[in-house]
Image 1 (cartoon, rainbow, N blue to C red):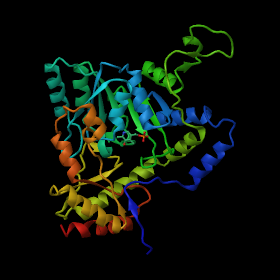
Image 2 (image 1 turned 30 degrees about the horizontal axis):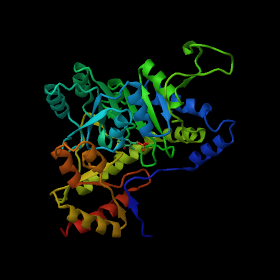
Image 3 (image 1 turned 45 degrees about the horizontal axis):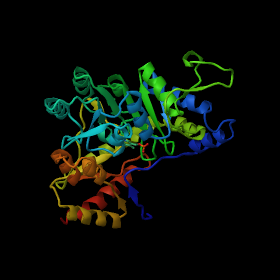
Image 4 (image 1 turned 180 degrees about the vertical axis):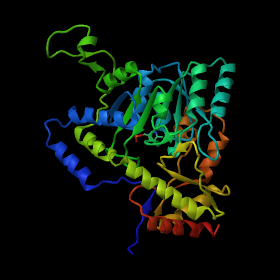
Amino acid sequence: MEFKSYSYGKQCIEQDDIDAVTAALQHEYLTQGPEISSFESDLSRRFGAKHVIVVNSGTAALHLACMALGIGPGDEVLVPTLSFAASANCALYCGASVTLMDVDPITGLLTPEIFQETVLRLSKQGRRPKALIAVDYAGQPCDWKNLRDFARAHGMYLIGDGCHALGAKLNGDELFSARFADVVCSSFHPVKHITTGEGGAAFTNDDTLAEKIRDLRTHGITRSQARMRENHGPWYYEMQSLGFNYRITDMQAALGRSQLRKLDRFLERRQRIATLYREILRAESHLTAPEERSDCFHAYHLFPVLLSTEVSISQKQKLFIEWKKAGLNLQVHYIPIHLQPYYRELYPEQGSLAGAESFYRREVSLPIHPGLNDADISEICDRLLKPLRKI
Ligand SMILES: *Cc1c(COP(=O)(O)O)cnc(C)c1O
C-alpha cells in the first residue's frame, strides 16, 4: 500500500459535481443567475426553513445575521469561547462588544447553566446582552430548547452558528436550530459537510429578517416595487441600507446543489467513521472518545478526542510532531477565542475560562470525511496510538 497521509477534513468532489460546475459555466449568468435561487429552494426544502439566503461565506452569513437583528454599537453579544474566531468577530464587525463564555470541558458545548450564570452575573452589573450566538460544536446540537427559553425570558435574540451541524438532528428534528434561533448560519468551506469552495447560508423563518439579509447581501439594494420609495422607471433600484457584496456565484451554487444531493451519504459515512473510532478506541486508556447523546443525530463535522491526562503544551507539541511524521496532519479545535492576542488586547480584564482551556489542552481532532474507508480508520488509529503509548 502506498503511504497515505491524512488530514482532519477534506472535500469530496465527484464527476457529477464537476459536470454541474462545467454546465453552469456555459449558462448565461455566472452570478446573480437562476442557480442561486434554485440552491436556496433546495436548501429550504431539505431543511424546512422558510427562507434561505446563500452568501459567499459562513462568516458573511453570521455578519448579516447580526446586522439584520440590529446589533450595533453599545450592544453586548454572548459567544462561547470554544469556536472559530468568526463566531465572535461577526458581532465586532457591527460595533458591538463580545462577552466570551466558558463551555463544558467534556463536550465542548455551551450549556444552559453557563449561559444562565453569565446572564445573571451581567445583570447584577446592569448589563443586558442583546444576543446569544450558540455553536453546535463538532456537529452536536446544543440544548436549544433551554437556551431559547432563557434567551427569550431575558429579551435576547438567538443566532445559531450551525457551521458544524448541517444535517444534525435534535430529537429527530433536522430543523431544530431554525425553529429555536432567529437565524442559523452554515458554511460551505471545503472541510464542512458540503462545499461550494467558499460559501455559506442564513436560514430563518422570519420574513422581515430574511428581507434584510437579502438586501444586505447586495449592497443594501432592493428592486422590489412594493418597497421602493420612488420609481423612476424600469432601470430604477434603491439602496436603502449600507450592505456589502456578499454574493456567491452561479458556478458555486451549481456545485452546492450537486453536493446537497449527497448530504445523506456523506453524513452516513461520517457516522460510520465515528462508530469505528469509538469501537477501536474504547479500550484505549490514553484517549477518551465522546459518547453519543441519545437525543440527537450528531453530524460529525469533527471527531474530537480528549487525551486522558492533561499533557503539557510541550508534550502535545511532541505528539503532533510524531503524528506528522507518521502522515497524520491533525488539528486542535479550538484555540479558545479569549486566548487570541486580538481578543486579549481588546478585553484585558477577561479572566480564564477553565472548561474551554482544559478542553483546548486535551483535544485532538481525528480525520473524518467521506473520502476515508474502513481500512483508513484502522490505519489512522495505529499511527495515532504509537506515539501515545510512549508518553
Ligand atoms: C467554518 C466556520 C465558520 C466560518 O465559515 P466560513 O465559511 O469559513 O466563513 C464560522 N463558525 C464556525 C464554528 C465554523 O466552523
